[in-house]
Image 1 (cartoon, helix red, strand yellow):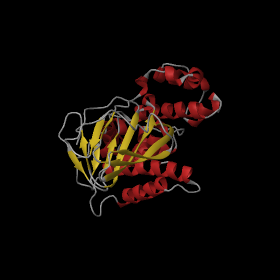
Image 2 (cartoon, rainbow, N blue to C red):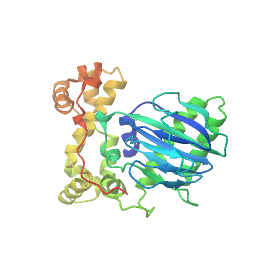
Image 3 (tube, rainbow, N blue to C red):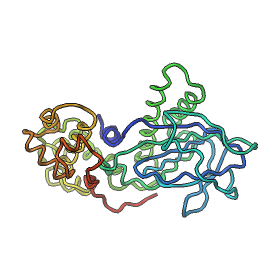
Image 4 (cartoon, helix red, strand yellow):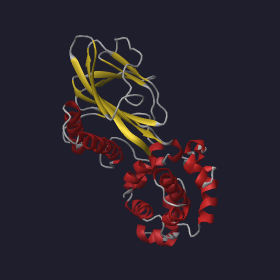
Length: 323
């Protein structure tokens, strides 16, 4: 798996949820804060306004995509002057994989695709933690064609479910999230100055080293070997990696191994010895000690009750410019 796919696999819990809503004017909807989740809104038909908590209203039109990586609250309405009601539709708190609803008055319709993903804050990867509170991808001709195609397919499946819709919608929701993040991290989009992990993923040398660690975390990587993958001298690689990622190469490798182990403990019945080998530890004892230092619990206890683990296992992040 590549780095971005790995990041989502390690953090996602359960299935994503979505709902296709026909809002009939006048309408206004508040979407409450939902820590531990990431939400999105896509305008499929009509237009509306985003009402952020502390900013000016933003006009939205067909094809616009909103992504809220940290579950911050916001409101949408047919007009900035329309009173905003308390939540009537919260696909993260209720509902299934996909649903349809019609809400509001009797005026012109705006159709939104609304949904979200549950994330595990204990395995928060800095790729997502560095994202701004809101990512707005306006519809622009010729940009993000894959994202637009996924939106069209998803809207059609939810509007008229057919055989296999459960699997198709679940896969399309994952694709939607990846395409949103790809658009954000695309170094050629010219819409924002890349920093931190976004810059690391677009740097061929550092991304090659990250890809190597993610593809084979059990390998006994050294800084010299990773520098060879990056095509840099050992010293130049260590400096560049630490500057962009925020951690030295082997520190990040240890964190990634243990985050991978935490996911395996939750999602599989594999014995501890097998998990320790899969993430690069020569003995179950060494693995257990490293895991407890990072997560505050022994692996067996974490497997039984992961919710009791402190959230300190997330890598620290630097200050970033939010655009």
